[in-house]
Every structure is written in structure tokens, then in C-alpha cells.
Amino acid sequence: MPDPSAIWTRGEDQHSEWGGRPLEKEDMKPHYLNDFMIHVFEEQGAYANWVVKTNPFEGGSDHTPFLRADIPGLLLWHFTDQFYHTDQDRLDKVSQNTMVNVGTAALVSAYTLLNGDNQTAEQMVELIAARAQKRLTTEYELSKSSIAAGGSIKEEQEILDTWSDYYVKTLDTVKDLLTVDHPGTIKKSWMRRRP
Image 1 (cartoon, helix red, strand yellow):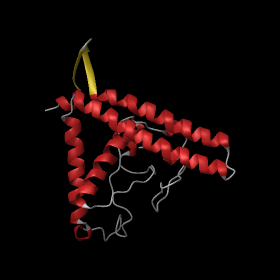
Image 2 (spheres, one colour; image 1 turned 120 degrees about the vertical axis):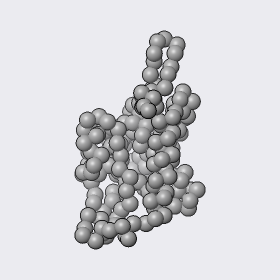
Image 3 (cartoon, rainbow, N blue to C red; image 1 turned 60 degrees about the vertical axis):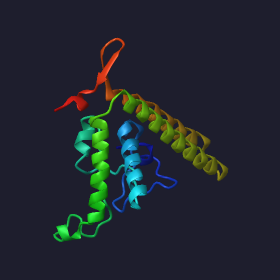
Image 4 (tube, rainbow, N blue to C red; image 1 turned 90 degrees about the horizontal axis):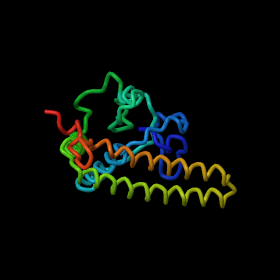
């Protein structure tokens, strides 16, 4: 989902070979789903010795209509692939290892969200806060280097403010994991109550 790396792609962030167009602050979609899914996939990667990378939002795929309707969505993919969207895109070109790891991480993510409870929400807040701290520290160091090299203090402050605002709004979305029946009572969200 769009985060400020789609506006300012710097540091270790890189677009895929498809590239992306710079977005505006209004295009951001702050939500815990981004950092949560990346965290789960990174854990699977560490467990299975499987490389996990991310790219800034580039748009143009099946999850985009969901985002336009303000429904959280993201793209899980393996790129670049010389056979992707060609007449050679066949099952024998699919990596079994990648499918096992993607399937495992996606299933763990779905299971966690579908069966979560108040403790899940608390852990999500801790996860998002930790990832926000890491990202803001990285962005601060990048801004410091940019200013030392003659970059604009105003622009660097805008980048830091945008990331900070993004994570404040992201933390606010964790409340979507819970619903309130009446004061003092919290029940599982509608997502986890589906049969």
C-alpha cells in the first residue's frame, strides 16, 4: 500500500524494473497491514533462509481497485521474472520453494488476523511502533546526510513529518481489529467472527 517511500524513494528503497511514478501525500494509505505482512514474511524468510524484499508502491495491479475503495490490500509477488505475462508463463517456471514460503507467510498472516483478539491488537501496536521507530531513525539519518551534502532543510523536514504522520495514522488503524459492544467491553472484530 502507498507509503512515503512512493513519494521519496531513497536509502535502501528501490523500485522494481517496472518503476513507479512519484505519488503525493494525499495518495498515502496508512494501515498496519503493510508492516504486519512485511514482518511475517521476513520471519518466514529468516526461518527458511528465503530472501524477502519490498518495493515502494508502484500501482497498476489487482489490489489497486481495493485501495481506491479504501479497502486494505497489497501485492505479494516475485519479480523480475522473464516469463511474467508472456506466453511462456507456465507452471514449470514456478518456484516450488517460493510458493511454499509465500503460502506459509500468507496463511500465517490471515490466520493471525482472523483469529486475533485484544492481545493481537496490543502486539500489533508494539510491532508498528517498533517498525516506525526503525523507519524514522533511518529517515532521520538520510535527512542528516542530505542536509550535510547541501540538501534542503525544508524538504528534509517535510519527509520526516510525512513519515511521522504516516505512522501516527497507521497506529490508529489497529483499532480496526476491535469493535466495542458497549462501554468497557471489547469483542472480536467482524473479520474474526465470520464462519
